[in-house]
Length: 247
View 1 (spheres, helix red, strand yellow):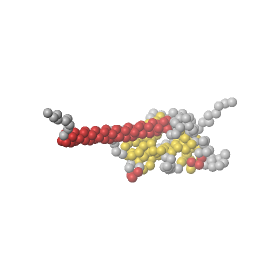
View 2: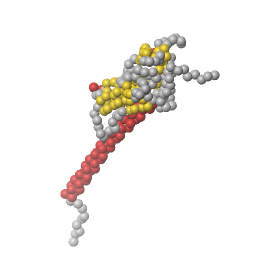
View 3: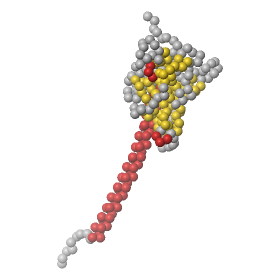
View 4: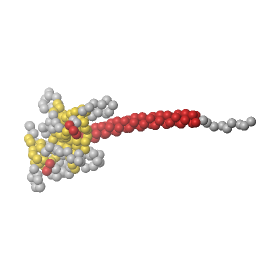
């Protein structure tokens, strides 16, 4: 009697190939879904890191402000010019000197900071940007000052700087904002009067704090949103006094 040889039929082979194909397609789809979820999560994490990093940079720049001065109208003459404190605060821009730098952190040279608001791309709200210029002394910074203005109830002067301009070297701190406004915490003007927030700075010295109000153009609960930054300013120097050590 002849024995039958073991094997598979053509139908069994087709069924096996079909099942393997379906299993492969399912695995590929599962991998695609996982990669897509990972990409979305990574994108949100990176956006959150950028937002948190920009908020921290902005906070440290403001808190790093130092009592610097500028010789307005000095030109190239060593004895000419009017000394004024290096600070100008408007509702949409700030000129100041800070010891914090974007590139070198707290370890580098003092920088002249221009914090200002510009329109966003394609009318997409506004954005907050900063320019950095190395500060090498009051006379070297003289070309930046175009005029001076009197301070009420004081013999001091405030500098008048030109409007800052964005350039390829400008760093964007916050983008796609519905608004961005600066305000300054002013000391009490008189007895029994509390300090108050002012939209512009027109007093001698420096404000007690600086606040930057921001709101996103399109709120998204799944992402870290730009928030208001309030930085205390710890400068108690009187600009009308000459601090010289006796010899």
